[in-house]
Length: 39
Image (cartoon, rainbow, N blue to C red; front, side):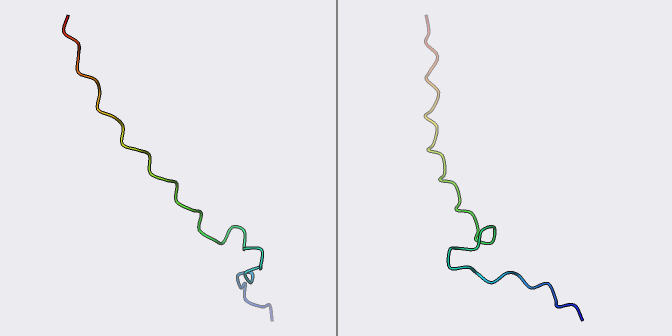
């Protein structure tokens, strides 16, 4: 009988494609738009 498809064992080097990717750092809040210059 065919063996069930088990996920590959975690390798000591780190299972590539199994570990969740680190979340990107949140972008800094954009500065408020400059007030319109009245001429």
